[in-house]
Amino acid sequence: MSTISSASYIDAINRLAPQIETSAEEIERARRLPSRLVEAMADAGLFRLWIPKSLGGAEADPMSLVRAVEEVSRLDGATGWCLAIGGEYGVFGGYLRSEAAREIYGTDPHVYTSGALRAFGKAVAVEGGYRATGRWPLGSGCQHSTWIVGNCQVLDGDRPLLAADGSPLTRLLFFRAQDCEILDTWHSIGLRGTGSHDYAVADLFVPTTHSLSFLEQPIAPGPLYALPTIALFGAVLAAVPLGIGRHAIDILTSLAGTKIAARSMKTLRDDVVIQADLGRAEALVRSARALLYETLQEAWQSATEGDPLSVKQRAMMWLASTHAASSAKKATELMFSAGGSASAYSTCALEKCVRDIHAAGQHITLATPNYAMAGQAFLGADMTGTALLSRDNRGEPKTKSDDDGHQL
Image 1 (tube, rainbow, N blue to C red):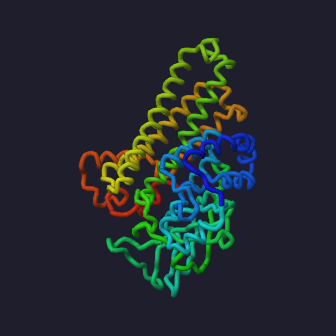
Image 2 (cartoon, rainbow, N blue to C red):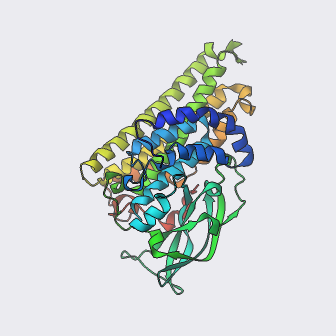
């Protein structure tokens, strides 16, 4: 079985770079990744970075997957997004019971897991499992998935079951991809190639073993699975805007030697306004990137030492991810403006960077209310009701937040 070490994943991406770049137009047009590219990424082990070692995965540190997603997103945002989803969902292998974990993650080196985490489905408890019915939006990569997850509210007959804190009890169920109906709904401003369509199941039996809850402790013992899962997911998704922002800077830098600025009749390279914009963009991307990696490194150090993260450390993970996305978006918009009329042409690719980064920034884990949540934590506010920071779990997304953002 193909695996990848944290020392070699960048080499694997460098080898894949020509294929990703030459596929970019097809990805945008077809609104999905080509199968040959998905298979090449799987062969390189990129989707197995967070799968437990016991299942043949790399069980790499958080920074490895974030860096991989950042580098791929610099080549193509949609491909980076699909790597983010498929890569981070490998962590579920640390939560599932051993037999199900091995069936889903340990037998097929080309396994790709996708799906939404908001509880849009209903799961009626029956003997041995659940009867699941529901429709979920924005299932990135669902067309090349092996398994698709759907978060469901658990029912006893028609009565909702409640968790210990009185909130609706939910479980994340694993469906075989062939058991899901894919609905062609992904007609988007950006990240068009992610194939983030709606998907649905109807009265589908799912064994109890093929489900998990973030309220439960992980099965795998490693530090990766001790970290707050949803906050980790936010950090991985933030790598997509960082990569896109870097790509926008690359494009503008290349354009600067030939494009004439109308106001000065100088090349962009010699125009003082453009020079300042480029400097601002570099500062935005580099500083936000540094904060994200520093925050992840500190969280990883605590986890490897067996120390639970403090409320402030959890808040920093949300803050760093949100700030990375916000700063990269500002940098990309600066580069689009600096490119002048050339930016409007699809041949320039700056317009695609702007579209993709706006789509990525809509995700709930990167939403601007996270700034306020972090501020409350730093001010010592009572965070008891803020599940993503204060509960002794991995950070289950709450139903009340469904309308605050989008799950791509």
